Length: 267
Image (cartoon, rainbow, N blue to C red; front, top):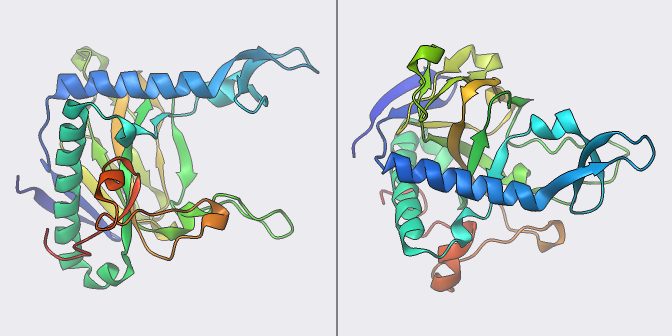
């Protein structure tokens, strides 16, 4: 598919109708995957000191109920699913994503010099009331004097990409079980607000200039597919690893972080 391309400013580029899917199948897969991962991360529990009801994570730490209920649901192991239909669908989106990258680099050629490898996209679900606060995609929230973050993978991000898997509608009367209200994608410093539409992809710099938020979802569930293009030599000491598809093609199929064989050239 050849997408319709709109430069929204500040390095934010919209690719409309960038890919086509069996949307009903995709929504079902999104719910299955994100709900399963969430169930392994938290379970209802009580604070041993205060008696407050909330959630306990896998490490035994207590979280207030509201803090967890407002978090997006993620399917971070999406590409480890070995079912043939899953592999086929995800591969088609990844190919559409890489094609849009080629278009993006025609507009910002020097960005290509900063891309060595990619983080394959993962699923993100936003049920009603869930949102994502203002942030940049390279932030680790480090402060001087505190221990350095163990996971520093975000510092490798150069270009972010979000693929939208269902539509945002303006009124509750338009809801039909496949769409949602509110949940716009806003870029505070660039005065840009995007209303999600299935089949679209949004590319933008991962740095603070394109700091962004997802507004709270009203009704319905918002589904997206989020990934990055990155640079830098992986550092295993801070949990970074990238697979070379030429050296280990089978592992590259299910790995999340992979070198780009074509670099930033036309796929």
